[in-house]
Image (cartoon, rainbow, N blue to C red; front, side, top):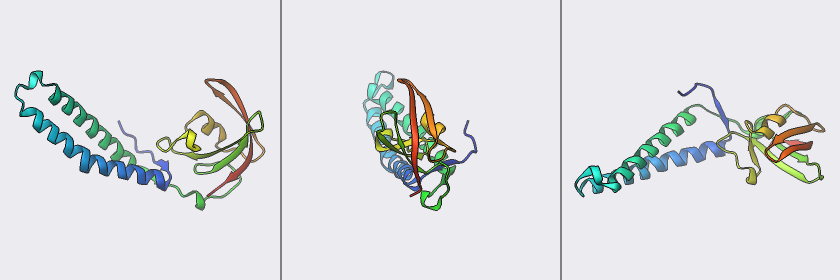
Length: 159
């Protein structure tokens, strides 16, 4: 069951969801209906693999559309440029040093925008949760599948 809680996200993430929703509604939905019609034309539906695959795909598309519509309706768009302060919050870009003095830079984003390789981590991830509310100079310890990781926050940027 969907909740009514707001989903913080950046404008970019919101726009990506809108594009995906439009693609599913205006392209994928019509393509799967055409595939179902073509499969029906082949006769006996009980042994028609194309029909069953198309119906399954239709169910997946409709579920994704419903999910995206729910997320978009609850979106709370946050512009990091409007933020300031000395604490890490959603949208902040955090520069930190790991145990080997290697710099890591991550922006705190929503779970649907996260891309660790692209420098974006979710505020719900273990590292994201450990960083929220911290300040420059704070040390952070995070439990990961590969063991404990330690970071020192060197800079917080809102851009």
